[in-house]
Image 1 (cartoon, rainbow, N blue to C red):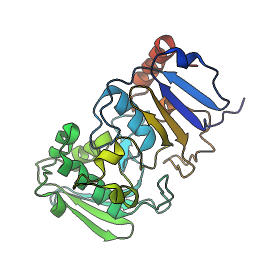
Image 2: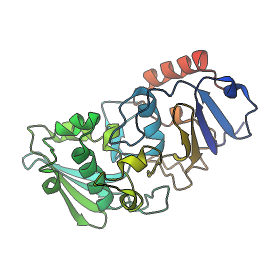
Image 3: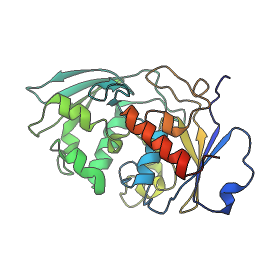
Image 4: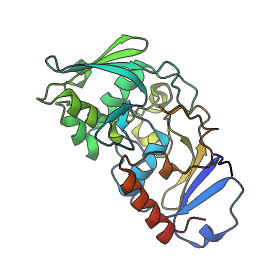
Length: 264
């Protein structure tokens, strides 16, 4: 039987509503959502939000699902490392797009890292390992051309460590053109992103009702490093999109999900 990508993925709190008739082409995952503070990748740091963010956003790189020690490109096409200069020169995929349809630009990467460090929310310590701080982040990121940028760090870490840090959820790339207009009081769109999404992941936010439900809709612009479009990925849940680089860990999670959280 050929799998189809679910146009809708619903995460719902455990309640009688979870047992209601499920519309066609929709997966309902019943689980607790009370721990979610924010779905902004610069702030998300709880179990439920960390499970959701990788479905909405992509990073430049991530660990290979079959070999977690290996870092593979996602939004990056390639990179060149200079250990002595503590720099990575990143070439972006020219065909990468956000769910909005906006193309990925170096400005989006610079905006994403700058806001994550400047907002200084709970997961920011991960990027701080690179020596990135609110008072120096602007000088560490530079656009080279329309598809290339250079990242510099001040800490005494190798390019391999830097790439591993950039594979974490806080290093997710957001669509500046969509987020910036929704910024208020210099919050880099943080308040807006608590309830909305602006990423390039397999899904985009349709509805978020705190403590009740998250409704994700398939992202037609989705293009993974393996070449899967959203049409080709139909039928796979967010938990099957490589959220966990460790395949054994992912399998254990799916077992728990099936046993305890009532896949409907």
